[in-house]
Length: 429
Image 1 (cartoon, rainbow, N blue to C red):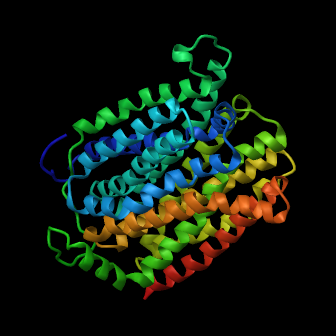
Image 2 (image 1 turned 120 degrees about the horizontal axis):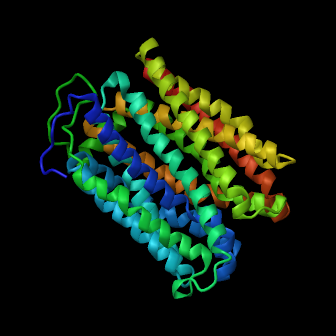
């Protein structure tokens, strides 16, 4: 890790290596955030927690610190060395994973998940800002695509690796410190995450590039003027954020409640679904990300005013029928529709992130991404899972969870379609 910013590497291999380090950091953060999902039923039984408590741990614990601190983190992204910030955030998600594995009650597990949520979500604007400065505008969509592939791979690794580890450790007697299988899994994965974090120590800070042709001061404006300038872009930024958040509501609810549906409706355990679900999430996320990056770059070449958003609009439309996966009568159709939902979500993520890095000036990117992260995490992770459980109760009880999950996802995705259409019109004007 160097102290001064360096120009964007002239050799494509240097840029690629830097992007791969960032993608590994994105992967590690997503592993930390997702790792509890495949083992959540085991943790719930081991600690004697209720469904409501698990919902808070999987939702609000991740959302609260990000909602409070995402904007300050976004400002730090715009004003400080992003690699140093990323190192600090990675230390948070590793510490949170360790605390989660050693948690002795609801409160300690909640705090552990708060640390994980802050580190993983706070790293996203830093990584995307660095990615923008390591790529040209013409290849920005593909560069962001690499980062979203890292996220998809992290989710897949959490399910596949977590399911395999807990399945391997479950029959082992006499684990150190009297650990149960799910706790040992959390601690082992935390140890593994030290490797990608160590790579950041040698990561150089790239020189900042501007997102527009207008001359801008090197030092970003203070928060008040920056918010005022971002407000002037509200016809574009507001529907972009709204579309991303609403589509993410369906995706976030799916990642929280898919495992309980598999366990309660189909009688599957982590060792039964961890492997195939990890492959499914990895392939669908990577496939959707590749497609999203290609569509974003193609759309930008075809139409510089808004074409980069075509993929986001199409992905939101695809999410509407895919959100019905929870109503599938069998596991194969459940898996197929869930994969389609992940493909659509990845397309949307690449499209929106690419649009922000291209259409929003450099000195406002971190703030814009931080705001979207704060609102998105709070609503998608903090509220969407609870909306599903409350809907299920309104319909008559926990047995209506699949219907509630499908309804929430389909309606949220439909709202995303409408808001992306508004963003597209704003970009064209």
